[in-house]
Amino acid sequence: MKTKLPIIALFGLLVTPVCSRAQLPESEVRQREEYAVYSAIIPEAYHEYEGGIMVIANPTRRYTPKISQKDFYFRYPSPVVSKETLDDFLQRNKTNRWLTRKFQLDFAYIIADGAEIHRLIGTNPLSEWKDFFKQYPASHGFFNLSRVGFNESMDQALVYSGWSCQGLCGQWEFTLLARKDGVWTVVNTANRVVS
Image (cartoon, rainbow, N blue to C red; front, top):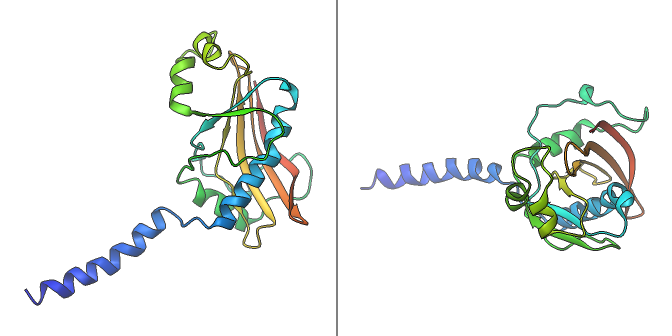
């Protein structure tokens, strides 16, 4: 019995660091800044559809493809994403975030269950989305967000987002943001896909 106790204690010490890496700790600062980044990019994506209700899919959508700095095709030559920001983005996107009503937006929005959205639109991308528009009649589609990657000083952020609408309509892209005087602004976009 005496030899089993040290082995169990050693096992506990070895397992704890592995488990803690699986889900990164979330600080209040990181959560606040993540919502500030979302609140900065959503109006840019939504400006064409003023007057309706924005439907935001919950939880965030993981961005899983392997990507390196050389894989970005930014709209402008600079600024570009730092390795530190990209590494954090890739690490954060191993998990999802369940969104809550912490967005600072000056228009109406709904946070809707992503699985329910996909059930309503069906598997055919050319469907008429009748059930979706019956549930969300004032919407024009729905918006997906990834987790946000930050650099250590939290003055650069990277997020992948996408807007989906009826048929093959949609747009997805990486957005690079910078924080100055406590305000996040979009400074570049990359790898835009429009259909």
